[in-house]
Image (cartoon, rainbow, N blue to C red; front, side, top):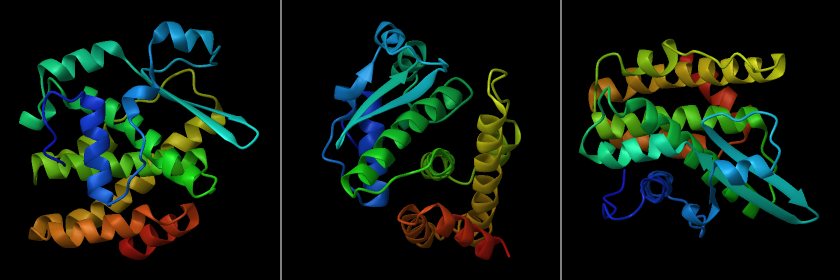
Length: 216
């Protein structure tokens, strides 16, 4: 993760960290796209989770808005993840990171006129969480199990949404296991970063193929 100045917002620091990790640049400032609860309600969303990227298309124009729970952001200001991940900030860190991951990935795909599926977006966000937690916390026992094994899904998901989230979780877990086995356990973080950067640039089918080959 990047050593961005602490006076920057947590979302900006996460954006800079992700862009540095993957060597990409959106040329957008995530804070300019953040909305609060009142603004989200005006959008008449069907669901209102604690983190949500709203995407709208009007002709060739793409509109983005990011909602992240205000209590989570306040907690991260008090319990800065750059100073360490612990039980008091882990969940909120992952929540904020997921939102920024979605924002960065959609912005990059839009700049290349490449459509992205919801499954691809969720899969990449799950991988991003694992990668960033490893870079912040190192070889922490039980990290992968905490990210992917102790997951509870919202009760208001429909069948397609539930399947999508479960598939993203399962595939990200498979990929994270290969990263642990091949790189993390041998302190080969430079090689892990190279693999992650290659993975980031693949489309969904190629990502799933990459995971299958690495796990085979």
